[in-house]
Amino acid sequence: MLPTNPFIRYVARIFQKDPFRGLYHANAFDLSILIPYFTILIILSIYGLHRYALTWIYLRNKRNAPRPAGSFEELPRVTVQLPIYNERYVVERLLEAAAQFDYPRDRLEIQVLDDSTDETREVASRLVESLAAAGVPITYHRRANREGYKAGALAAGLEKASGEFVAIFDADFVPPPGALKRFVAYFTDPKVAMVQGRWTWINRHFSNLTEVEAILLDGHFIIEHGGRNFSGRFFNFNGTAGMWRRAAIADAGGWQHDALTEDTDLSARAQLRGWKFVYDPTIECP
Image (cartoon, rainbow, N blue to C red; front, side, top):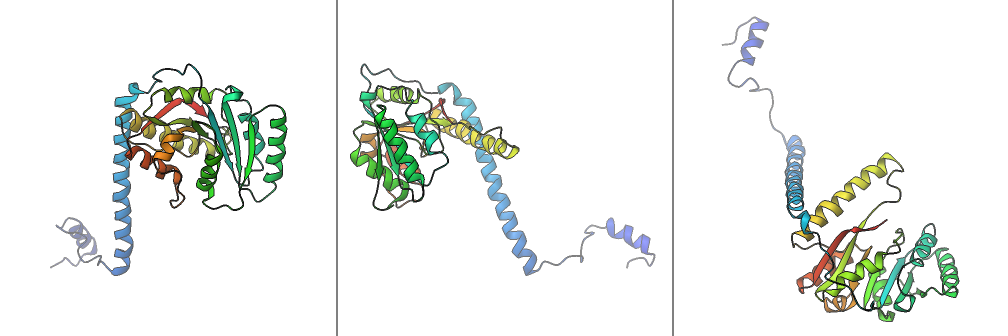
């Protein structure tokens, strides 16, 4: 029996074996919140452990960063594909950067794969015409429809391509002049299907938001890609800033647009076929 004095009764309740007995009863509403909450918390905890594991794998294997097996006596023919869609604010920057590639022009082909529906068409076609007149091996391609979106554009361009190796850069990238030669060097190993460069950021210091986004993506490119590739595990092409062996694309079934992430899809199929992927974080592509 509880004492009548309120203060003594309060103290007695605190120090009893179950001080919260009778104060709360579970109900459907609370459970509808608590169950999803703790489920998500468990999933995030597992994800966090996964990140710790990747960090450990990276630190353990970071000295295993790949190096080219050799160099070509004669540089092979390379096709550069630049898929664009309504990129009027950055397309000029992209094409001007592509025109500066340090690669023999008689061994280079640049395809502008334009699926745009706005004034990007006029800007891109005019600049391609100007660059071609100046001797840049660049051509402009438009399709009658956008079937397959980016994957469809890459596949259509590949049908007309002449290169043994295919580099891909999205419209918001500014590939450095020496990127192609550095990518190509890894293909002296006949088992290599793809070489991925590291993304870097033109606007990293623009604001606090861009700083945070850059840090998060650095984690992906340094820790995830580095840990996986340096330890011999699968990793995927990121859709841009990389080069493929054309034969490997064909062997893996080509670009297919029945998946939302055509780059990851092709990466998985190629690696399951036994092809080797390489990640070189020193090839930086902003």
